[in-house]
Amino acid sequence: MKKKEITIISHSRNEMIDITAQVRRAVSDMSLLNGSITLYVPHTTAAVTINEHADPSVQQDIILALNRISPVLKEFRHLEGNSDSHLKSSLIGCSQEVIIENGNLFLGTWQGIFFCEFDGPRTRHLYIFCH
Amino acid sequence: MKKKEITIISHSRNEMIDITAQVRRAVSDMSLLNGSITLYVPHTTAAVTINEHADPSVQQDIILALNRISPVLKEFRHLEGNSDSHLKSSLIGCSQEVIIENGNLFLGTWQGIFFCEFDGPRTRHLYIFCH
Amino acid sequence: MKKKEITIISHSRNEMIDITAQVRRAVSDMSLLNGSITLYVPHTTAAVTINEHADPSVQQDIILALNRISPVLKEFRHLEGNSDSHLKSSLIGCSQEVIIENGNLFLGTWQGIFFCEFDGPRTRHLYIFCH
Image (tube, rainbow over all chains, first blue to last red; front, top):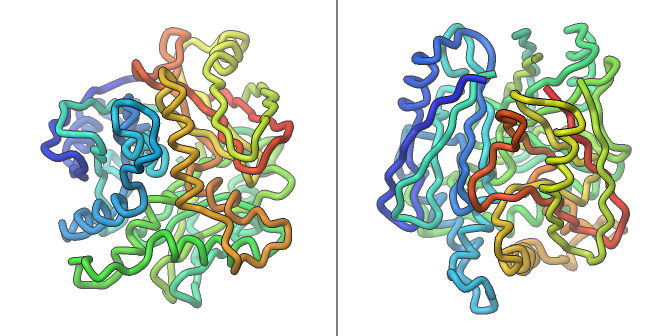
């Protein structure tokens, strides 16, 4: 399988970073016309998802609500203090398949692809595998 | 990749709609015997999941509990008032792979496939891609 | 598609069970060098996820926080009393793709694969399909 690596630099503890353009470029570089790709996050406190990328306030609202769903609990035993981040990673998921049609990402009108940082700021990686 | 489109009409703001029979029919139409399909929701306030389809009260309980997990928060800034719906979409996910074996959907005894509406009622679409 | 079945015995109602070694062995048995596998859970009160497997306290913290997110609600109507388990299954997800590179699971440094039991103790199954 062909593989491409994307580097992502996050600036907050929790952040949704629009990577649609980077994924589109990678697919073009891999000359994939029809098929599918798998986006894979090799981290345990980050994730990847597809959601609205027209209005940035959606991303802020999602982060706000996710922090409410998965707060830092005083009962947590993991000493790094980021168990909330690990849970967010499994709730959103570390991989996402994207269909490629005629060389384009098959996405809905309002959909974009987001790298989700849950324990930043950090330098992160995301892999694109071409089926 | 072969592609089929399913149209779904929802009747509530939040609703789980059993689409197992429609997916089964689409797989039969595509003459797929062995392999896998990807179910893809091109919307940002809907999702697709696999869960119990024997007792409809499970679906009602899941919707009830999801509304408690992701309520409408007064701090939300997105003006359309549906940030709770966007979050639900990313929590459940907009795609699902299903294995096909001998022309049948490979599902557990109690499993069915559900389109999840989180900002209805609306007319929605779901795509089935055949690998 | 080649298929392998793994049997998992859980010992608690909620439990994350590290199955990385079992998946690795199955991939080796299937002689898959490059490609991907789909891990599929045929149950509606269990799931599969990828998360940290270095420190077992992460798994305990995730279970603790998930129980807080999806408690048993008195409004639930499903008579089996496990609607919280069904919701957890859809939040985490019943399938996971894993990339195989040079015969190895393509996982990040801290990542392991976990079967998630949400209505145990039980004997469970997970299927590995080779693409």
